[in-house]
Length: 56
Image (cartoon, rainbow, N blue to C red; front, side):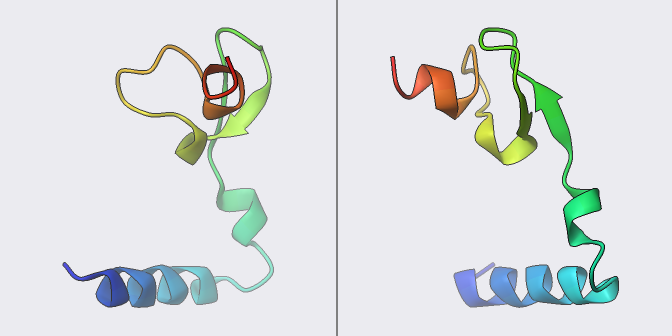
């Protein structure tokens, strides 16, 4: 799938429920910094979120 097709799909998903996109973000608690962060802040195989692992 090309980047533009992926972006179009994400736009359609966001337009599905306007104004409710913030509630659909899945948050997870980082096991190191204990902060709730969006799932996109985590990478497979990483030990923590990008906020604490990326800075240190």
